[in-house]
Amino acid sequence: MEGKNIKYENKRKKIIKSVLRILNKREYHSCPVDEIAKSAGVAKGTIYLYFKSKEELYFVVFFHMIARIQEIAREVFDSKLPASKQIYLFLRKVSTFTKKYKNIVNIMKPELRTIDRVTHEKMHQKFYELLRSVSLIIQKGIDEKEFKRYPPGLVAAMLLSFLPIIAQKDSKQSLIPGEISVKTITEVLLNGIKK
Image 1 (cartoon, rainbow, N blue to C red):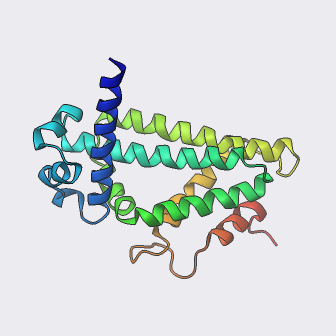
Image 2 (spheres, rainbow, N blue to C red):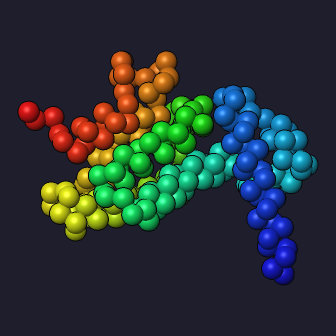
């Protein structure tokens, strides 16, 4: 039975990797299930054994990306660096990750408006888990007296609010013109804007 579960998970991961690869090159609506199946080396019908619909597959990819950012937060937290350096490292790693999947990040936002209640709740749960992981870095800085004693969840939410800016920084769709760097964002977060 366990071998069957491993085989199932491996095929599921292979499908998700195919979607990541294809979505990173084209728009969601022009990403046919046939092409996903072919890229994954499975029949089109097999896709629907693993995912109820193309939309579900899309959101599984979205959740996969959030989970990867959460893994980055955990990896950074586990490093022996001071919390201020961990913040910089977290933003730098997320910047590298979002640059790799820039097209997916850019097409996610419009698609999020169409989600159903259950998916919306799952999305909030994933963001909450990510927020908790980043809060650990902030709490470490407070415990080590490197940061002021602000609520870690609030500071983590502020830090995460920079992620869309980081994802868009090299895009023509960027809302903020000019040079945006991870270093600048880190400095603004750590030092504030007051002279």
